[in-house]
Length: 190
Image (cartoon, rainbow, N blue to C red; front, top):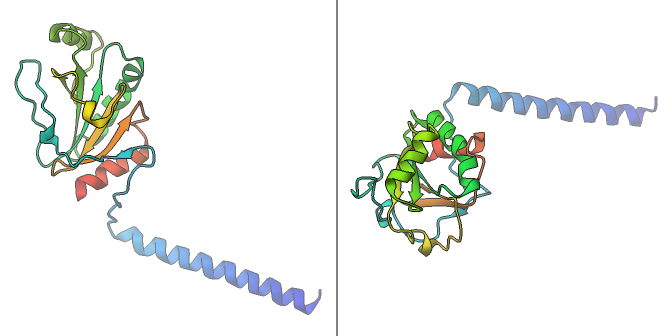
């Protein structure tokens, strides 16, 4: 074998070994230390443009009492309706997400836009056996989403622990993805 080829192979092998050593060292250093996930935007969600807080939304629960979102928790608010097929298809994923995030200071509210009297919506919910750990409630004002430019349902908004809107999603999504869970857990650590 030509000596120039031998030297080239040795250089390539050395570069591969050095890169592997750097990677292994980094992995070992980070293995023992708790790593805090970075809060980045989810590519498939839009930044929440208005400078609104959770208090901006004037909603009422089934008893007509003002809805207040929990303080000190990341809150995901999903607006849906009984007639909205994409909303109904994503509801099991939202419930699974709420179960997975229950101990991570993340709360989930499913807000039914008033497409009928509250007792009809409550009957619909009980027939579908939806409930804990998702907080189901009602938006009495059907135009609550108009300022966001929403033209359909579902609409989902993520509020941080201070109640500031961070992300919004128009349309259904895969709420059980690791990407979503990582984002919400990191947001809860801020």
